[in-house]
Image 1 (cartoon, rainbow, N blue to C red):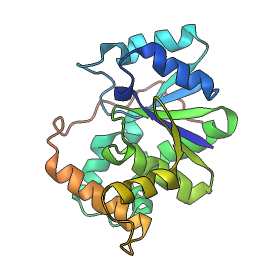
Image 2: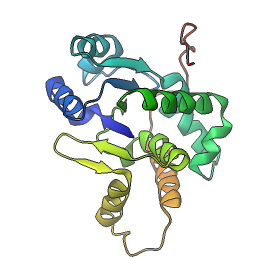
Image 3: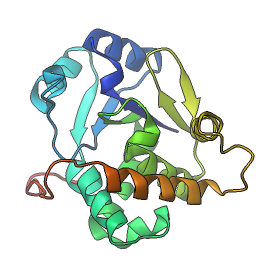
Image 4: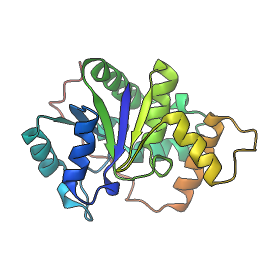
Length: 199
């Protein structure tokens, strides 16, 4: 099982913590390319890690391997499926690490956006689901959804539920559109942490 969460749905970090505790999460994996937030400074890497540690939740940064800027570049290069992401050696390494940790702990990947369909963590979690067939749970301030419930809700909200479109195709087209219209931070990657032991 793998959980996902977007911190922008939680203005108060205590509510973020409450949802983590309710779901017995003991490891938060940050998959932002840039682990800081101008809008929500409590979720900058250092204060977040310190806060979570006080509440016996571990924090790990994997944004170098699974960050949105890397996904964005691959989408712009024309990948046609989520599984094609594994052609990138860093993403493959990050996914292996994610799987290993999910077998040992209750893990939630974390990014900024509240809505999975606005966030690259949907790509990551759907790829995880495809490869492992393990359940994915998207966490919100007032509810939780399986990955299939999130997809079906998105279809209904966007009047796509009567259209014959595969989930894989829907997600790929969504991200092509998202990265076309969004002007995110400049294309640059942080240096790979030298002391990060993945296995």
